[in-house]
Length: 112
Image (cartoon, rainbow, N blue to C red; front, side, top):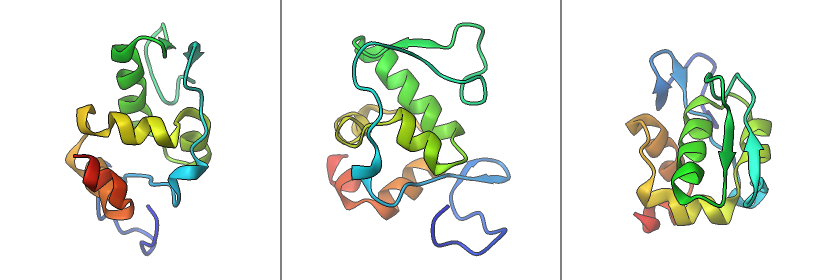
């Protein structure tokens, strides 16, 4: 939700909530290997662990964080910029999330 006036929802992540976008992909320095457990705010299932060494689970975690994050610190903590660029063409995201991120980051537009 960068550069938007208060209350504006240009690219919704879901009805009534704008997608959160980080200003610089280099800020994203989250884990790239091993097992992580997302907080319940980002993933509502009883088992919130993801094996980042499994490509399917890695994509699933990124999709959830991109859809559910409401603060920049959540994006910085859980996502990695290089990994995001690599995964971008394969991620299943709401149209608003995809548009918001591609509108801010040309390298994501080029990756698709």
